[in-house]
Image (tube, rainbow, N blue to C red; front, side):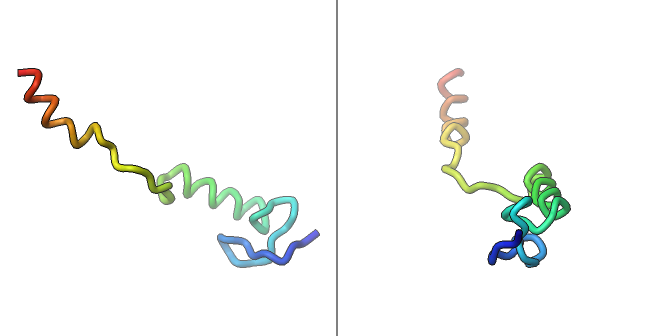
Length: 60
């Protein structure tokens, strides 16, 4: 069964078994991109990095 959406990897029609992808191959390509840090979810900056210099001065 095919839906009307397109695969985000290759733009072919999405297959219900692999939604939101068209095939296992495209699902695996997407997973590999996540695992190799090609994708990233934006988040708040790490405040501890900003406090790193301040913490160093308090220790000495």
